[in-house]
Length: 367
Image (cartoon, rainbow, N blue to C red):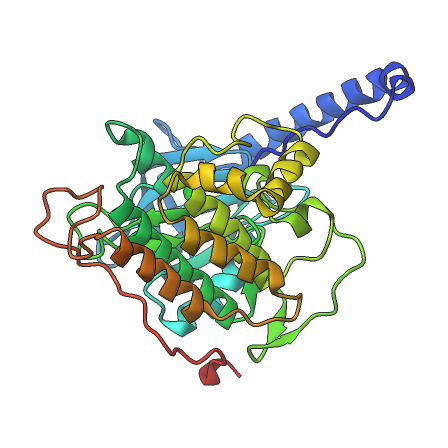
């Protein structure tokens, strides 16, 4: 994940820091080369199989590659089932995959429909770590970009809001924060599968365990490095404060708002302080917020954001309260909630999971 550059701190730093910047750039380039060499060598005559204590996996295709590693499609040799293998170089300065694997173990215990099942994990010595997971389909960003007008219908947006809210509630129930809520970190099931209408929450590399037994929170740190993506970051993240459950929900609010109006006023901004100013203006200028929503869901979305702003670090959010406003928006706009989602227009009806009211926040099985 790329992080926008911070503003220049002064002319003196510009003059004296060029050599240091060049040195760091060379070091980063060398490290990236090492990390790329660590990855599975999927080419003619290269590696085709990765083994663990439990099984072995044949690599059949590379699905993607980024700054934090690569993802491959693999076949489990014991039963020929297809899975995704996500790997990360052991030479990463800040390892993220072990954190993700630990989170997935806890998440899979909850049996939430919004968590991808982790099948296996392991290490190829001195090269890379990996986890094997159930395959999913396209992420919510790519789906929207593939639509004719690059817009979701309001019915689909509110179904997305419902499912992603449930995913966050369940993540928080097992004591984790995500800290990078955005459309690319949610994906639907695979086309043709029973879960094609289900939305999964992904990428737990930045997640942080903040609670045990459901609600005993860590003491907040005085200062924190920025974590997240500027466009969707909470005000607490902008201000270098410790994040909590309310901050994941605030990021969720920005994500849903962007789906309702994809021309959000901070869309083109890269400077974090400037983005924070616009987000603050939403709270201070009612006409500004009204214009943002253009009469669609304005009362409900304003109420939800006001509620999030009232929460404190230790607060356990009332997810059902938020859901009820999402449902109110659907009713007020006469949305047909039986209609299939935009990524499956030819389906007869919606067959994804439905938000369950009254779920206990403390998960007894995890205590």
